[in-house]
Length: 311
Ligand code: SF4
Ligand code: SF4
Image 1 (tube, helix red, strand yellow):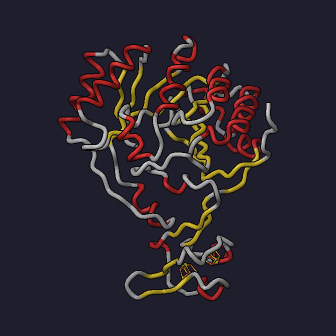
Image 2: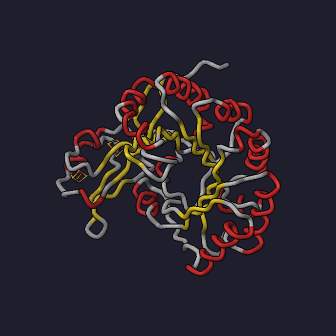
């Protein structure tokens, strides 16, 4: 067992979330991810460091931040409004501290396990009534494995159930340790593409470790029951017949019972621009294609299938 880091950077805590596992939940979004999915809907959580994010719609054009920035990283342009030169910005956050319009904000707040559970624990009554709990999400939770394992253990002592949301790209032993914990009731496991070429091209990493970890989890009967596969669906990227059928064959082989389908939406695009990234837009599968995929998993594989709104 390693020493558990005392604090990690949390992107946000979302209360009353209903799409991150069953019932009413508090989702803890941790910062840092080893993948870089081109369609990521939380691109502000990829970088493990604190970042500066802009909300251009909030800016009232007062110019205070330009004066406050000692690095000369800010300028007001006629067409674009306030522009950040990220090559000069060292994320000192002086500008964000004084922007009362909240047009400049930090992404990532250091939090301890106690601080997280103090907030999450406030809604325990709702969790108990609805079969909910907390969901640990990211970013990628396996980047903070010791912290997450400790968080789960402490949540267990408070009688709080935990859902894991993971890409599966990380240390196998740490993942298994989390998965086997009694108060971990659900595991949302991403399946971005079973085709490794596609996986590498669109996420930046091979899917080999993800598939190995999935096989490992599914081989344990108790863990298999907790697994819900999450499939982001992007038109002409991972919705082809060959990819869907190969995925289905794997699910059948290892005994998967539940699948969430997540057709692409473009809500991440603005956020990517606002943290200084270059956005790329995709399309969800055509309606009839989504219906075909749903029918395939439901009728041919007899899986429990749900279509959700978030990629
Ligand atoms: S970002 Fe904030 S401080 Fe800067 S000009 Fe806009 S409103 Fe003013
Ligand atoms: S974070 Fe610091 S360096 Fe970056 S724009 Fe704001 S004041 Fe300037």
